[in-house]
Image (tube, rainbow, N blue to C red; front, side, top):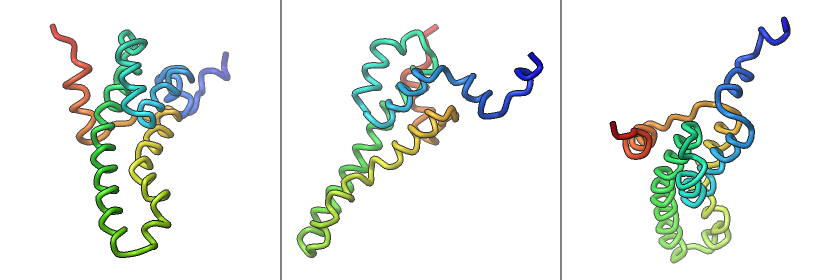
Length: 132
């Protein structure tokens, strides 16, 4: 028992942030958005505050992702008219908007508390507050 009393910070964060399956589902909410967040909000996240929080943030994140993806496509179309290099970089550039979501998913899966400046308060106001 003496060995269990001294836990690391990472172990404490992982213990407080749900089990591995919950962390995986929460991480996927940022990568496979908006499908996974909608499934979580409609199903298993109803009774699980941890999953509901990340599903709500993932759903709001999908709006940010859509804006980034749209801006990337517009920029690519504009550069396609002027250079062949844009055609070669097209497969790489289309992935750029997904990079922040991948970093968010990695942080959530490792047990970190992910709080996004605009997304988190909006998600809490829209999805997490229960009417009294």
